[in-house]
Amino acid sequence: MKGVKKAHLPEKTCPVCSRPFSWRKKWEHCWAEVRYCSDRCRRDRGQIPINQ
Image 1: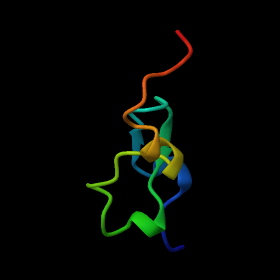
Image 2 (image 1 turned 180 degrees about the horizontal axis):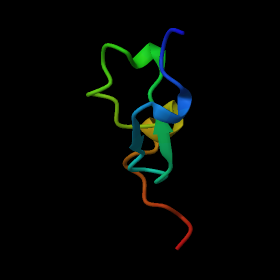
Image 3 (image 1 turned 60 degrees about the vertical axis):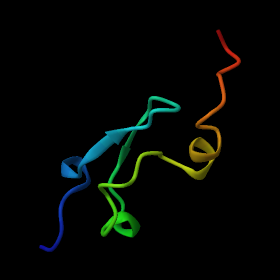
């Protein structure tokens, strides 16, 4: 059996939405630089949340 089970993949927490996200194959060579879970969170990183 090749690979790692999804339950054992590394995780990070998105600083914008505070949700955990897992390692993806497309991030294989740049996982250390990945900070945001999605393009939307990356775009919204400097905005103040409306819900207070």
